[in-house]
Length: 483
Image 1 (tube, rainbow, N blue to C red):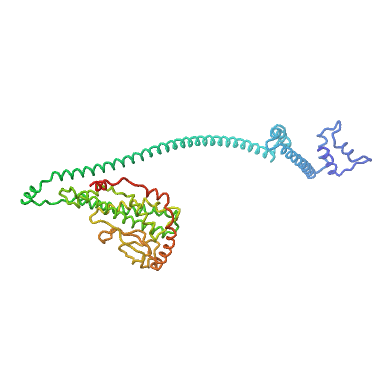
Image 2 (cartoon, rainbow, N blue to C red):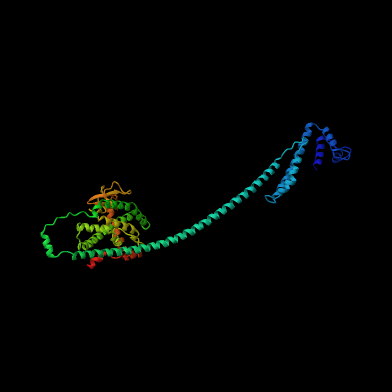
């Protein structure tokens, strides 16, 4: 087909026309086609003799253009046919049948081989296919390794979870055993206290029996007796160290326990001022309850030890030494319950009905213990008296960060100051605002109205449980009852 086109183009280029009534095709076939006895070389020489160099070059270019157009259409058909089979279909056919024929098809007479873009594209695609296949296999292997490692980690986590659950069960059992041990230790301490009190009572009775008769006492009184100098008790000798320790504990309560109590209260109360008022009133009531408990405890100890006191120390020093040595006999839970009762009837503070002040019982218990121990000092430590609307004192309080630093009156107190004989030992904290006196009056009226409604609420089960708890009675109380 290509050779016939060449013959037709040569006839048209030469400008010859058939003669003697013959057709154009017959003349072309007679002169240009390969008839028997005519070789291809002879035909080519005859064609080149009639044309100039430019005409021959133009004729070759036209033949190349026609062949490139036909090849373009053939490669388009080949591309569409290969796409019907998918991404990897027909690769082997192209490699075995098409690629070997591309090199001789594009060779010239001089032997130079021109590599076409199609060959390079096919080689590049084949390389990309190989790389893609290798990358996919490598990624698949990586995913399998990652999956294996993830399964191993999951198994390890499950094993750790089982071990942690077993440890948690063991810890819970140990905790239960520890609670039992603590209960038994507390019972033994109570029994030891009772036995100690009984021993003291028996010693006092024995001392009374061994006392001399009245006559002997009168005769002995006639002779002058040397006056013995009384030595200070252990409590007075350790007064300075105990005072420093208690001041440090009071500061730790302000820095840590107070902030923990604020966190608990803010979960139920959104008003920050009310939270500060509750904590301040809890501190004031804790000191008041601890001082009342100390007075009662001191009276019982004095009544008990006065019966058989014969030592070189004074009765007051003996009582103080006994209280310092037996501070664990202080019924702190009773003081905590008394503080919560006082806070429930305080008109300045209120609390949601779904919970109670028992949530800050840890702060109240620690304050009661510190306040009770401060009463054993000489002189005792106490907190400063403060009311809303009083004149702010720089020597007693620090201003809170949200205060109005130009105001002269105290709106409310955040923490009380620690005093010793009207001398400030540790400063407290207060909030100052303008118009504090009028705001305090209006707040007290609103609180009284809300308090009248909330007083009728029933006691929470948690508070009832703590109020119903009763510790074993003090051995001193038992001993005083026996006497």
